[in-house]
Amino acid sequence: MPDATKERILSAAFELIRQNGPAGLTMEGAADLAGVSRKTVYNHFTTRYSLMDEAIAARLDRCLADLEAIIADRESGFTKKLNLVLERGFSELRSCGRLISYPRLSATGSESQPVHKELNLRLSGFITNLVQEALESGVLKPVFQPERLTWVLINIVDGLLFLDELVDQAVSKADILKDSLKAILIGILTEEGNAALQNSPVFD
Image (cartoon, rainbow, N blue to C red; front, side):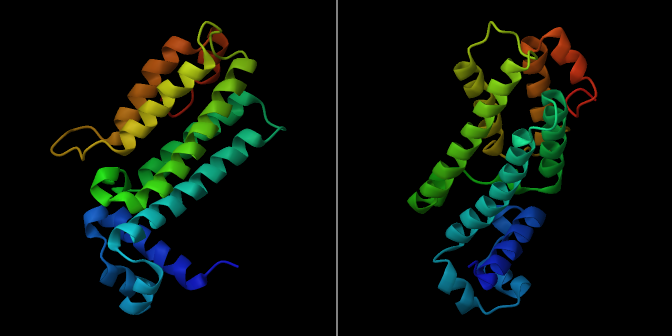
């Protein structure tokens, strides 16, 4: 059974990170927003970094679950599903505020490694399935090897998550992701694929 108090603390911690970036998360702030004592927070999380890791992991887990459910839907055609994945993905990126200024793994210590490893495996599996279904649906040029193409996309997404904060720049991380995906898709999509994705958030 889920621990309601822990879930409340995680939700509060994520909201602080979303609004103020990782540096804005404190154990005291999470306790206040969750309506619990500081001791209660420490009963569940040993450090600020472990709280940060779990809060972000919980949000990404829900996001991935939503995207996986879209791809698993056998009633919809692939291009419809892909457009929906892109729409939901960009919506999540925008709503998460400063989440993706999350510090690199080395900054948070070894306790964060299992969380990151599990999320990377989930992300890899999701993109692998996406690429395979895209190939089977005829929207990707068959000259590309699925395994290599999968890792190209993983590298783009993973690299964006840990990109240092853009200070005094006219572009956002969402802009960078959009342009990166647009550049890749133009090269790998068939004519059918290009036509199907012209109204997606990547090409708008």
